[in-house]
Image (cartoon, rainbow, N blue to C red; front, side):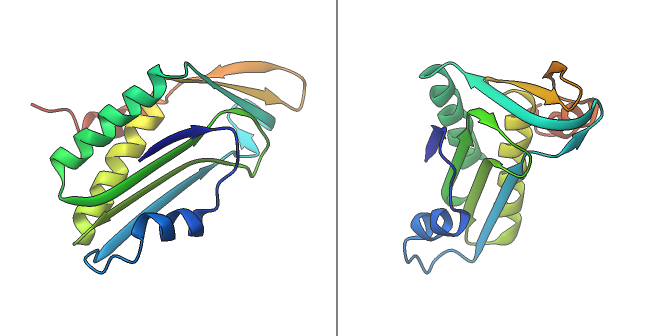
Length: 151
């Protein structure tokens, strides 16, 4: 399941809904990304995330399908917020269910590495001194994502 939305999400409720009473899932991995109050350019007062509706969801569905091809997942969920967010606000939720923990952990990392480096979202951070700048993936983010490149 993929959702791009402006509204906040309830992590516990999302996990419970995805699990839906399943008893075959031996592992549930969840990652929640939030807006930090501080980055390399100083204190952050807000972050704005933009996307192209339709295109973004199609691309996220593609990468989620790839995760299901690579690992034996029972279910997965990606929720990504857009709009203006404040420090402490939730940005992204990735949940993976599998019979075993390794597949759940690795697939969640794969999805997050993609979201951090290649997903079609554009982010700007506003700082306490009134400046605004675009946020790009860092070299360390790119290095993490590179490990999933098919050879």
